[in-house]
Length: 347
Image (cartoon, rainbow, N blue to C red; front, side, top):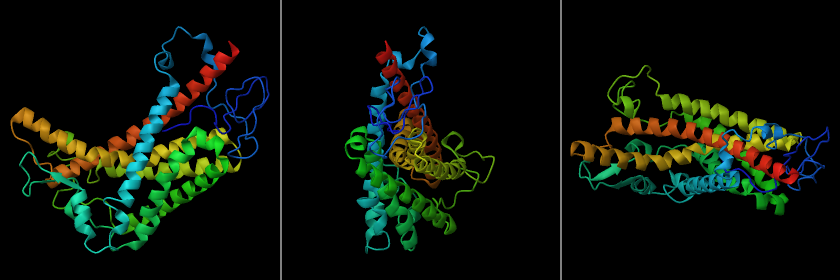
């Protein structure tokens, strides 16, 4: 998502007249120097500098109206903010690593995932964003905290380092070690996720029939399956998370850094959706209450279990799809930016 922009593109080589290059993708007429973040040159790969469309200047192009560099900077900032949210979630509040280790932390976690109800429709004047039984669900399972919660902290913390172009080029050793920690934490996350599934620690919505509350679009209508759409998309996202990690790491091992960068961006997008989802939950709760107040004169109580289930499902699926699309958009912007630099150099 937060793709690299100026320089420092690992292995983003451009073939020209059969001459391979690696490192700086802006160089089209000479072999570029090796990328210091990865050692010597990688395999040739065209990440962005496709000049084949140069003859279609009359066609609509996004880059004619918005700079690809600006797009990449905005995506990098968004990605970094989502990473900070994940770090804060694990380390500070609700501090999932403290579940089961700090006495009384369940109540702290509960307060961190509620908000005062200014609409006065909730029984306890609190807006709940998750059901009560989920505030301390990892407490009895230290294996989950060790293999999933802690690695999530490392995974998110490494992303801004690995995607920042200045850090990549100025501190190649830092990039290499951060990259190793990043992929090790990726695989640990999935092992921990396996334990979450094994112990049935997914989001629980008690007393709601399986086919009800599938989505806000069909809140009290029965869905087509007992399995919520969010469970399907989250399981698909987990498979994609593993595939992108393996593909990116394999490309780095064979020194194909252009391919490595593409799949590393996709890997970030395949996992950072959980932070977007957490940010969306309170937004959807307040939006529904305000919207219903304006339309019907009374705010709905989104702390009802059926609302909690529908909001969770919709926020999850929306975040997964949105992050996937933003990842692909980042790859397009990387290609457009490098193509523009090559075109300007050859003009």
